[in-house]
Amino acid sequence: MTAIGALELDAVSPEAAGFDRSALARVNAALGRLIERQRLPGAVTLVARRGAVASFDALGWQDPSRGVAMRHDSVFRIFSMTKPIASVALMRLAEEGRVLLRDPLAKYIPAFADARVGVQGEEGLQLIAPARPITLHDLLRHTAGLTYEFLAPSAVRSRYDEADLNDRARDNAQLAEQLARLPLMHPPGAVWEYSRATDLIGRVIEVVSGERLGEHLRRTLFQPLSMHDTGFVVAQPAHERIAEPFPNDPDNGAPVQLFDPRIDARLQSAGMGLLSTAADYARFLQMLVNGGQLGGARVLGRKTVEAMTVDQLGPIPQTPHIMPAGHGFGLGFAVMTAIGQHTEPGSVGAYGWSGGAGTAFFVDPAEKMFALILTQAPGLFDDVRELFRQLVYAAIND
Image (cartoon, rainbow, N blue to C red):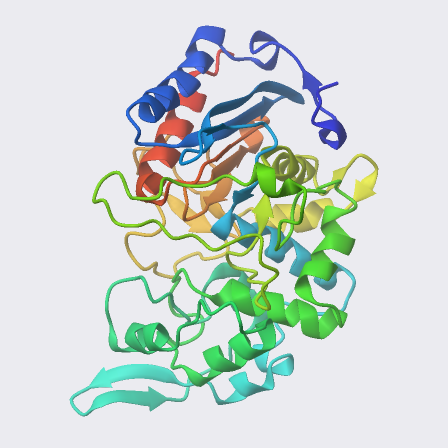
């Protein structure tokens, strides 16, 4: 068995997992060239197929400023790869009968009973009552009408920007109240727009469970799945394993500022706040591949996993330039719905997501495969994700 422990996969040769060895080696060779050119500080990659780990590698620098080499157990800010974990936690509460996905958000966060849609008119931003309330289903599939301030400029997104929603001195309850006071970008259910909806999932989990989000995730997910290096803060002595970016963006020289994972902040963002390792996140992915269980621990029912990883949007339009063409969205995951509409390879039904500092994963049920890459390189976010996916698929041999 591999040293990944509770992952419970055999560590075998690439050939036994159905990969061409020389082709799979091109994944790390390509990343290595980026590292040599000082475009990428370092990375950890893990590829598994048919119940076996085909490769698990640590490349380059964990901390380029101090010359610390990358480790297999380096700890990364996974940013939006937090979202699938929080979505699974909410679906666990649904399986326990403690929430319904049709429930209005205002049932758990009453301030959203007064939510209004911001519509730009000749007299400025007009606030209009929506035709229906935001539901938990909307939060999971990003159709709640919320947005992110870093998307294309608009009057509503300017309000988001002014609210300083990244202030880690707020707790989840305060962030939810702040979001409730901001106008919606779209009517609930009208548009898929990547947004802060998952942060509200974190607050709903706290209200329903009576626990702080980090404690609830630790008790219900991280402990059962043996994800011992995953959480909202990195405690000593694991500080020596924290991966860091280049101090300056290699493209424009601008300072790179990521949050300090050593600080136990009040905000525990369900949308972007977790720290994890490749081995830990691989356990989470293997649980999904196994239909909701790992090593005797049942986290979700098989049909719940199926519902989370199929397109839940149908004809609902998507905000452009966020999700690749040929993709829909399930309950926490982008899902490939067609092959050939985007440059990325894959299979219909493959699902995954990524994080703003260059972390990414995908699961391909048809190929019985998952793969993930962890790095801390915000400027190469899209390039690294697509390069990694392209080369992994190219290495499949049978």
